[in-house]
Structures are given as C-alpha cells and as structure tokens.
Length: 108
Image 1 (cartoon, rainbow, N blue to C red):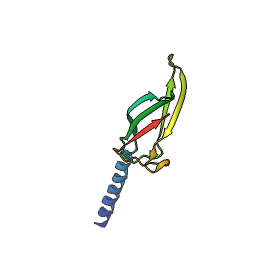
Image 2 (cartoon, rainbow, N blue to C red; image 1 turned 90 degrees about the vertical axis):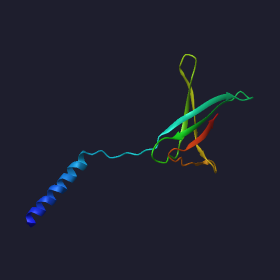
Image 3 (cartoon, helix red, strand yellow; image 1 turned 135 degrees about the vertical axis):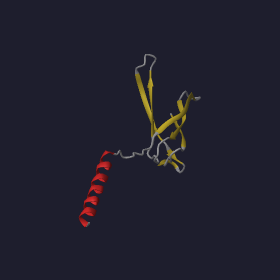
Image 4 (cartoon, helix red, strand yellow; image 1 turned 60 degrees about the vertical axis):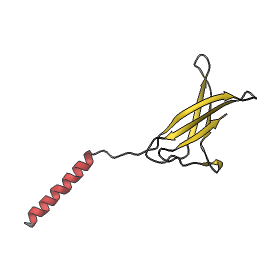
C-alpha cells in the first residue's frame, strides 16, 4: 500500500515536471508607442516636434528616450535627435510610465 502511494506520488511529480517543461512562461514587458505627434518651426526657425507616448505593455516603463530621424528629399539620412521623457519634478528626473499611462514629449 505504501509502495503504491510512493509510486503514485513519484508519477505525479514526474508528470508535473514534464508539463512544466512544455509550458511557456508568461512574459510581461513595457511597450511604448507614439500615440500622436506634430511639428512646427518657431520664430527663430527652430524645428520642434511635439507628441504623446503611451505604455501599452504590462509593466511600468522607465528611462524612456524618443529618437527622431530626419531624411532629405531624396530619402537620405540627414540627422537625428533624441530626448528623454522627463518627470514632473524636472528634466533631470525620469518618470515611471505605468501600463496604460500616457506622457507628452517635445524635442528641438
């Protein structure tokens, strides 16, 4: 009787490890998308980009950087610019963008 219980327990443990080996782990991540953007030139002819991002992932996102690439009329790379998404306490502070949350950005 004890031998049957030990054998049954051994089979159940082996089966549990076998099933766990074939199952996929759930992966959660932050996923940042640009929801909207626009651009304009100011009175000094500086080119500005304004927009909004959103975290569509499952985890909070930090240290978010937006990079814009610029191309000429022939579709050749001309330049790029980047900006960090700053927190509400100033440009030196990074924000934590929770899942579903949005944040504005601008770059010169």
